[in-house]
Length: 338
Image 1 (tube, rainbow, N blue to C red):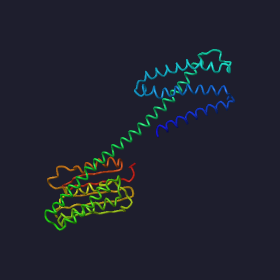
Image 2 (cartoon, one colour):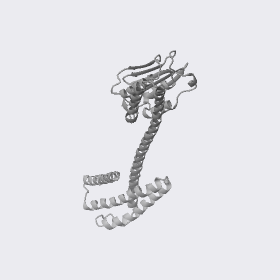
Image 3 (spheres, rainbow, N blue to C red):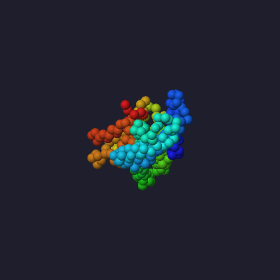
Image 4 (cartoon, one colour):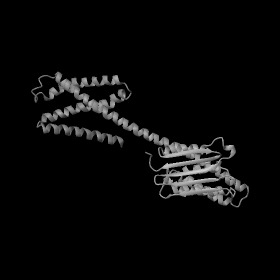
């Protein structure tokens, strides 16, 4: 398909060139049979120079950065054409043109050299420009494929990590023979449905992400004591907004993973704010004593990488620990920041 398009483009280009010459000659009132044959003859030489440069000289020398060799071969080809063409023109046209008194003249050789240089310049410019555009397109496609592969790898890490923690919770309930185990399994099935079928899309409706978070919170509540404080506040309209899947869920999972659950602590606070230009999602949780030395495991690291890929110049992520309390705030802009 691309080759046909290229051939058609060349044909159209040469037709435009011929039409322009004919129009120029006609406007000057010098369009005769002699001139028409002269145009066809010249066109054959020009096409020879054009495509010899296009298919031979540029790939073999210019594309390999052999500039001096390229210039040398171009001059040699133009000189050869300038020496071959005059006798042919003399044989064809000297009867119609009284000014042709000899096969060779310095004026005509110089004229053919200059015309040939112009053809070489046009041929080189088009070839180099075309190669540049193709390379840019190829690089963008490779970058897109690389991005897709990296995102798939990151998601493959996020999902098993998330599943491992959830199964751990259900195992605790089953070990205690809790009657709430079936409900936990049902909640897990809803979470798995989201992860396996809906989170594979590049974007999901924000409402789906929120529903997934609520299911996760319900599942976590099954194993937590009643005095544990878990708050999820939503402010603004969440309908009609698209977001990359598992973005917000990662922060929620991190809060439950590292937070404390005693009545003397603040518990876990989750806030979602939707404004006209952005959404802001934040979590606040305590950090257990043995985990205070650092934060930012695989979940948060993957979140940072996914944000940089999917929302470049469109997000702000703040992770901070103060006096045993961990604050995470993610702001995603619906349009790139100015």
